[in-house]
Length: 108
Picture 1 (tube, rainbow, N blue to C red):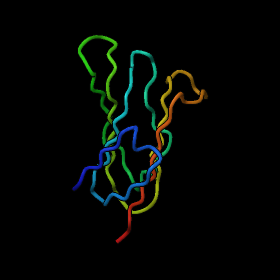
Picture 2 (cartoon, rainbow, N blue to C red):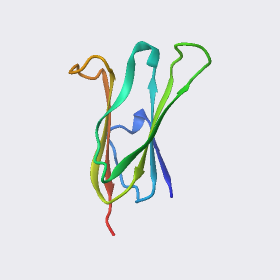
Picture 3 (cartoon, rainbow, N blue to C red):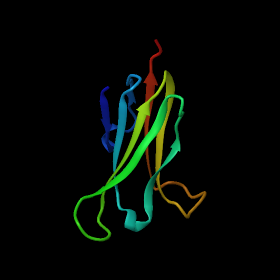
Picture 4 (cartoon, one colour):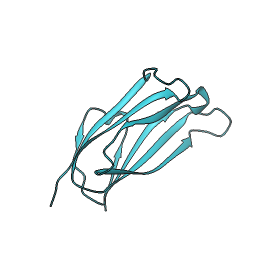
């Protein structure tokens, strides 16, 4: 099993992981501002969510840091990982920032 690590600089690219691989998206976030990276779209037949965590850059309340979203490659197909940075309570409002990568997993 391999691990594919993606950051903001990888947005707009395409990747071809294999079944069983782990895809890890790491994006800057400041949760105390109310803005959080939220998953907009994914085909769970290709990538299954496998975890979500936050690592602050420093100690203290309100610290910025890195949001890490993990996905396991579960089957062949095409999907996009689409994320939007938004406040959860502002339903219908557009994201202030976006992240998207294309994922293509070959079949047997």
